[in-house]
Length: 558
Ligand code: NA7
Image (cartoon, rainbow, N blue to C red; front, side, top):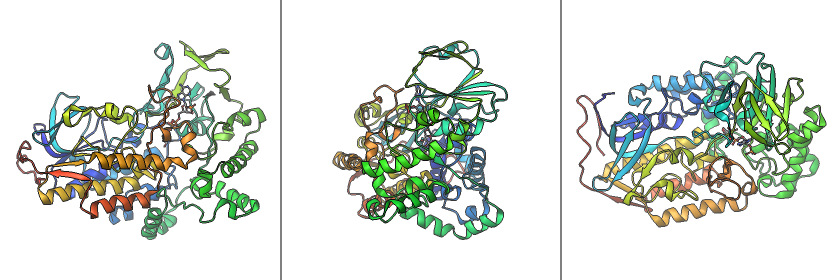
């Protein structure tokens, strides 16, 4: 990458799953583009989250990219739910195979970006002091990439080691014989705790609210099995494309009340012991909307917990009472519940004895002091809009995106924002990618954004801005998709809840997810494109400001 180059047609921010695919599409079209990544290397989520137990909850072969037959034929997924290290190797393999690294710049944090209305260009301020310009920005900055710490006094006073799971030390951590605290019991903690319980000296879990979970039931994929999967890739991706969540797990086509209780129990027995999200996503649709149906399933899962956790008092503490099964993001686990049967694992119920502060030696609750060698903060993320808020984004008239989205995001299709022209969001709020098997949604969104670029390129347009009305309609529609969902009552990142982020505490609901299912989302988005993007105002300004490409660079101009 030529150091002096400052102008591009497209700048992609983020070299995770979305950024990798976006740059691949742009390179294939010969568009002059670069990727800016704040981390020292590519991978996004899979670069950062290196805590033990970190792995897919999606079947590996439904998570990988689908765009290249050659890639599909070459890659051997070794487990049904592949682990972080392997996933990062995969993303590196993809980048190297398609020679994408040379289009990526690392350690480049985008601090601010401003739309230049006179020239239809974005100006980006980078942490290394450079200012770059481009016609389009694709913010591929991830859904869960802004980790949040608890608002606790004394975090810096702790004399042992402490870190958020997102920043788990890359060289690994020697846990043997150590007294370890884990704060939080979300999807991350549930993976971590199951994995480290038998590797640490003492493990103390600080739980504010229990989460429902279900077994992952992971296993290895043999060479023969992988050959079978390869032969069925078309079928697998076609099946994913038909389900609401873009997983292989399709909801029951029968209603909850259309079958007897015995049949329901039989189904749940089967799904609970199967791989992956089946118990969540291959269940009756009613469980997401009907209190009584949800309560019956929740009771069933509660009994499963009681059967797996020996101490009945601990089991009761692990059973959520404030929300039903599946209305928050369902963590999948491996030996999580059994961890509490071990003598070296202790559960502290923060609803009874809240945390007071971090001390030099550990943690203080209202009841007592605890001493630790390591404190792990598994306290989650400022989800979906958090990464946007970390960049000072200013659109038409200098409007700040953080101000526009202060109370809630508003978008057109989750892909564009009125007043922020030429800004593309393959992983933004309110598109289907946030609520589905992530790469499947990303591929759809990146393709849609790339088609839009092509459309403009063919017609010589330099500016695209979704209309205010279209944005208002879409945002209202997304809110409506929550109306029938029990999810709207739960305190989770699905509704924008985070006790550690000002304005995101209890009582506020943010309509982050499109809940209408991927097939419907894809149909709506494709229809917009097929009808000539009537919701988007296009204009063709002077083609100035983007300098001639560096010698030797092949750059198609938009
Ligand atoms: P989550 O699911 O947001 O979980 C965060 C956990 O941390 C959750 O149990 C919280 O309890 C707990 N938490 C947060 N702040 C505090 C404080 N201040 N004190 C005590 N406990 C706290 O994040 P994850 O990283 O587990 O998962 C995020 C996603 O990453 C996941 O859905 C996957 O898609 C990948 P609470 O429930 O708020 O009471």
